[in-house]
Amino acid sequence: MAEAVAAGDAPADSARPLMPAIAWRNLWRNRRRTWLSAGAVAFAVGLTGFAMSMQAGMYGTQIDSATAFFAGHVQLKRQDYIDRSRFEHTIDDVTTLVRDLESRPGVVAVAPRVEAFALASVDDRSFGAQVLGVDLERERRTVRFFNRVAEGRMAEQPGEVVVGSALARNLSVNVGGEVVVLGAGKEGGVAAMAATVTGIFNTGMADFDRSLMVAPMAAVQEAFGLGDEAHTLVARIADVDDSREVAAALNADLPPGVVARSWQAALPEISQAIEVDALGGVLVYAIIMLVVAFSVVNTFIMTIFERTQEFGMLRAIGMRPGTIMGMLQIEAFFIWLLGIGLALAVAGPVVFWLSVQGFYLGEAMSELAGQQLFLPDRLHAKVNAVVLLTSPLIMLAGVQIAALIPSLRIRRLRAVLALRAE
Image (tube, rainbow, N blue to C red; front, side, top):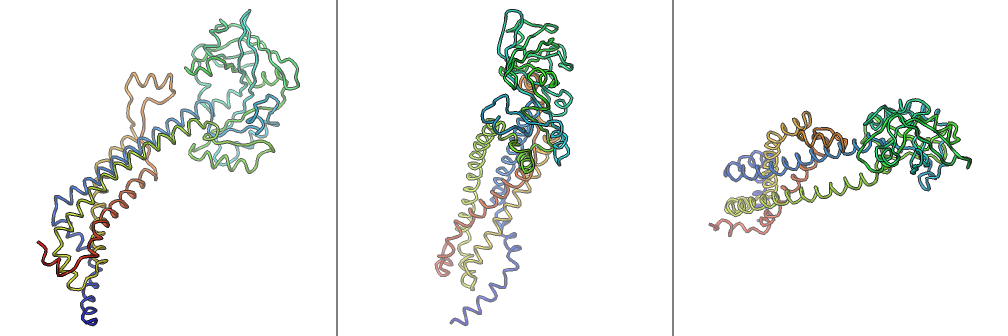
């Protein structure tokens, strides 16, 4: 009997190379069901791919707005300045360090900054202010903040200063007025600086508009007793997505005590907000794919019940249960392929168009985004490897598992009973 079974197994197992062709033909025995299953897969993959591309584009816009506006892609500071923010914790020999950094791979521009807290006075009005000394030419190559002045112009020469709109209002000073700044120098002496207001900026951000004063770095260094020193170096790199890698590479060869931090470390609130939002998106995508996977489970449950006699006949001629289950897995794979093809045909052109042209926010939203949120007037989709591969591969796994679960019944199928089934 064993020889008979073996003889019966041989022809059945020899049909394995033909399984893809047989599985493909089986799909079209019920065209409506096949297209409904493929359409469900296409809906899940197309919708999640579109949503992920728009989400990635929105995150890219947020990151660019947050980093290119003022903070930069990478920041360099002394570790003790990060920990305690004391004025005397400065980076020495800044000119040489900036030139060295700009020669590093991936670094486009570097801008040094001197940061001091002082008392700003106009006549009998006095308010606390943060004095920021900058190299204007380098800043304009690094960030966009110094291109935005609501009134007047940026401070370009010693003896000139630009102030925030709320600070100017508190001091009752306009363009052309004079401000006296008093603070403490590095060696503990009194730092004094008198400057003419050449411009007023209005960012809509209270922290900037209420306290910030911007002056040429050389003037601030002289007033506060600094040499070739700065507190922060802000760098712009070629690709903001590489900020962690660039920061790690810089940390391998920096002066003692100086550390480079990516924008994720310098702006943790932005990074955490994106991570939380992305997690919410993942949950929504998972629900969509789970619903589609259950529809595929239902498809294969119906398939197995309808083809019970067929499977019984295959078992009777010696085909093993694993071979039959493999054939069903191939059918599921073909359904996935059809779904991917439909998704690419329908959603692909839409995503591509949005990645090039973007989604126009409308006149009112564009004005708000440009003037207060510092965002572009269009949101662009972003297509990358994560967007292209994540949802199709997860859907592939879901479809294969959905086909496997009902097909486990075949392992317990008895040929005699299956042939009698109606």
